[in-house]
Length: 219
Image 1 (cartoon, rainbow, N blue to C red):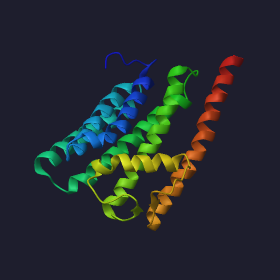
Image 2 (cartoon, rainbow, N blue to C red; image 1 turned 180 degrees about the horizontal axis):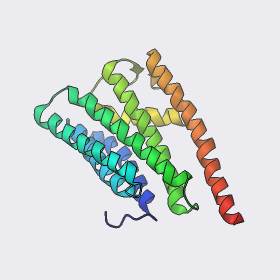
Image 3 (cartoon, rainbow, N blue to C red; image 1 turned 180 degrees about the vertical axis):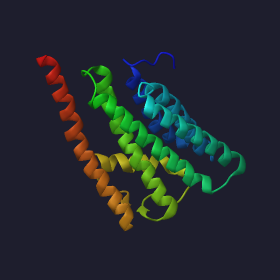
Image 4 (cartoon, one colour; image 1 turned 90 degrees about the vertical axis):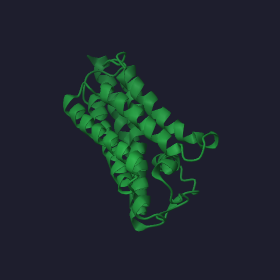
């Protein structure tokens, strides 16, 4: 972690997010019941990497530190006391954490300094965070309305994380395979908002990076 600096922080952040997305796909080789713990472990790892990667932004660093501490405490309570209510708390904290990380990363990439390789990789991290934010939103919807999304069966949120992430990125990129689809009005609203966000992300972030690059070249 001491190797993470201002010039390479987004490389580590992006790698940790990709690892988080890949890890749950190991369902076929893991004993039953271990997937939930695996997701929790990689989320904690992502938290640590995010905290160190975004330490430059002191205001958000303090915020993320508080959210991380609450998340670790909730995981411990869930594992030792097995309280059902902690699932909702955990998902909400993860959603807030991803949203805070997205905002802090966007501020560092889009509104400061010249464009370099680190910031270009950071734009990938932004895209991954956007998909993860909506994935957690879908998991929260399923928590309160188990059959709101056709194709995602009611199950512990750790078990559904990979499927929710798949559906989120399919929606974000407007691929629309149709194997998973929203049924309830709330789920439908969240889905089309994500599709809109995906389109505007490409337009806004890419144009911002290009304009920043042109400004640098013209100086």
